[in-house]
Length: 384
Image (tube, rainbow, N blue to C red; front, side, top):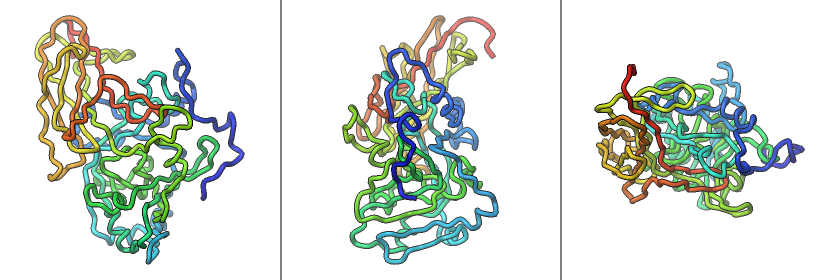
């Protein structure tokens, strides 16, 4: 359906806002956190995130697609094309298939750590995962349809439907034509995840995968691709997912992932606080790092709350190899001594972008790649 305002205004579908001083997480934010889930950080040990551990964000409801409807699912390619297409899954599988290992991160990762806090899905640092996606390169479908000379963007529509800030809508996003038809990265219309069918929460039966871009671009439950002669101005493009400092600021669009390194918390945790406990001696520090721009070329670690840094051993960056758009492994060793310690890691990519020590604040809480800090207590005792 077309986007448009409905009777869902005022308190029923309020505008975005910032939390007040001292305001805790609201029941509405808690409900969002219960619906969506992040990656348990210990799962960073996996090169490919197991199904069920990959982060999930669902804007509205997960569409119910029973098995009988999957075979009849149709993807249309139309608009500024010469040959409109209507493809079922069998037709899509007749195109050459590609499998890509891709790290995907929510644009709001780190939002709950901002001050003031934008009120929305309260992510800490766990909204990320890496999967192997199999599907059809989008450029092949667009080439099959034939591009009209005046086409400038490609708009993608999903089957999830809801209301946001008073606007009733299907979830829609667009990509510039050169990104949609490019081969570095190669955008996929995916129908498999980690070798099996897409799970319902990950877009069954079709989704978009845009390597290097934040998760909002990876439209799920994909059913329509439309080429347009003018830039798309739908809600998720022109209102949501913009870096803004002030209300009314047009901002700039959220696109590619900023560099980030995450550490697997060492030792074992306290149940409630998640403070880590280790014994004195040699401790392995390890994690993953990624960037949606050039590859990560350096990871540094600190064990004294950023007073000093040292280089970690980093898996060599590889944009030309088998997995150019997946995270890289890093590791270092630390000799733990009794007391409390604050650990962190930071990434630098090939273009010189360095993960910041302080928050890059904006009203939507997007792209907060401030370093992750981990409080560790070292002391004698039986820790298993």
